Length: 259
Image 1 (cartoon, rainbow, N blue to C red):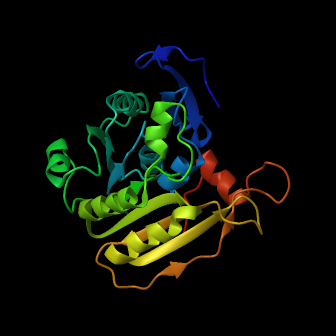
Image 2 (image 1 turned 90 degrees about the vertical axis):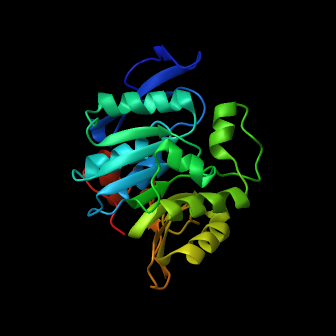
């Protein structure tokens, strides 16, 4: 829910200020283009409770990372984003939510050359948790808004580069968590099972009995444990638009995603 009307500009782009986690977190984000939603909140809520360091790859305005920080008081986070204007919004969101001591933003192409990532401040083998909500809809029509298109479209080879970069950044025993639409699950699983063990897949359906629209996938660096496919979970109640109690609690900020 928008807290106010657009009143700032990023290169003539209006910005809204929106509430998340029942008002525990407020974020500035562009009024047009890619906007944080359920996926970003679920991704942040999926971070392991005991993790102490986090890298959010392609962080956007910081939604997933800041959700994780709200849920995990002992966590520190690095947000990596290549769009300089969005980096500025992410930095402002860190300040506005009182998280300066626990979060930093770096300007980086997360699937660029390893040397460039290091120069930007992204560590090799440095994070207990690495999360990403990569671009998708590779086979669809590009969005008219260039920012939205850039944030939401890529091919299978690029997705594998995201997984490869996440593996490079994760510490031994660290978790890598992606949220992604189910049509590209085959590519996602191929990349995860090649680089991680203990791969866990959580399908998320709109309602019970309906096909899964998105999945959360987690892998553990260095593990040899087999893949686990969890039972699907429904986001909404059988009728109407209300969220199921588990997800209502997550979106209200009173519970993490336990999986």
